[in-house]
Amino acid sequence: MALTITMNNLNFNISSGMNLAYMSTDTPIFPAAGGVYKFRFLIEVNYNIQSNPLITKTISFTQQITDDGKSLFNFSEIYKSIVTPQITASRNSDAPGGAIPLMKGNIHTLPIKASGTMNPISAGLLNELQGLESFKGVANVMTINFYEMFSAIPNGIPAKDITTLKTKKVFMFWGRGQEEEGVVIDFSPYVFTVAAPGKLLSSNYNIQNNLSKINIGKNEYHTISILNKCEINTSSLPEVIRIRYYDGADASGSVLGNITYKNVSANGGAYLSTIDTEFFYLFFGVGLENLQKLVIDGTNVAGTLPDSVAGGRDAIKSFTLFFEENGGATITSITYMFNVVNYCEEYDQSRLSYMNRFGAWEYITLNKERTDELNVKKEYVTTPITTQDNSSLLAFLPNAIDMAYPLDVAKQGKSTTSVSSAITTTMFTDYLNESEVEQIKDLMMSPQIHLLDGENAKALILETSSMKLKREKNRGLYQYELKFKFANPKFRTT
View 1 (tube, rainbow, N blue to C red):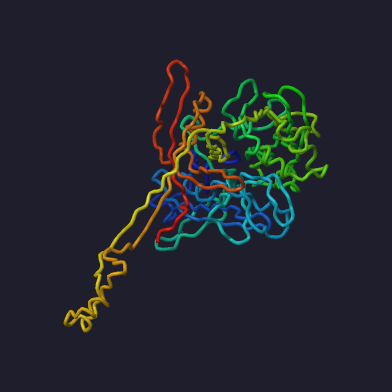
View 2: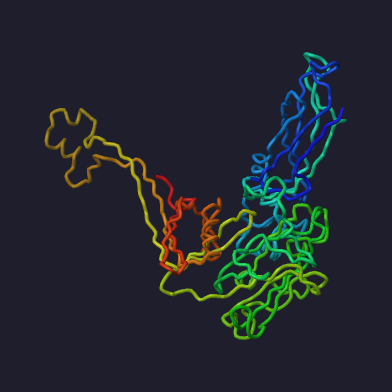
């Protein structure tokens, strides 16, 4: 007997991609001569819910077989139950083996401090000693076991045949598949190598000649995400991230300083080890506000903080980042250039973060008018305005009526039984170029949108379901109106 499994294993998988498994067997099945009874395929999906200490979970299910000895199963629904959009930093923000952190950290404000440890990097798996799995993290590695299951006698109970075991390993992260990708997605553009510098998993909207340009405010947070070195990505070498400050726009003028931090466990990450499976997906904090929170130790974090350069943070007009290996001798990623912009003081800025198709966070600041609207819905019941005590109103004497219906007391003839309220916020974009329009498109398709307010993030739901195009003639520029509501209402129903 032989079991054959064909699937997209030992490769990166996206949770909502085309995650198919083809199963076939040459085991004789009744009514074939000498065939077994009640045949089915048994599938066991094993994955980690915590890596330090290691805690695993198993999902088991069976799949019926067709007449030709084959079966097909789509794993996407199972994958989507194992990974989720990541809104908090991983527990590895403690040193490995450390105490339980006092609280989770906002993923946008990396680095976070927990149990006295500062870490600028977050891994893709959330380690949760409390056993809470509502948010599991953006990435996981699954070991999937396939067996044949049958009974040797007509009325017997099907049993697992361990001799037919076939094992597949799947590296999977949350994301959105696309039609043109097919089954096996090509992630080679996102792998860092010396010969062909790779891209991040985010901030790729405006790339020209291996240079990505991003606008950011001097006090705004920003994170990036990368594919780390791992068991199936042995050529990726993201050892060090280097940030370089300039006193001119577009990385021009004089260099004001550098800062580097290493991809090591002491910083919350890991590298050059194929056994750190869930660390194949990493988040880094790279905005000037993120970098200012770093602690310079000269080893794992070195260089100059933004506020410590000559002239302070206000002197920084742009900064670049890229990844290096071999102690900084070789650049293995393309360069990302951030221009520090001054927003119009006439309007409030709305910094939005949204999850892209790779489970990474993208950022856009809407520097235009924003209006908030409070909508209140009430439910009523009509109630008697006098007492029901017949004895006091038997003769409707004046004194009795005054007691039951005093003239100086508010009469609640209609009572409010329920009050629910919702705040909607409408934001308007500036006139956008083509690359910024692509951001709005991804924003509309994102399942997780956050409004960043200093250290806090508030989840939003985008109610705009179509793009209202406002185009200035002959300028090729676009403007959009976006309406949101808060996913977690500020006021509860009473």
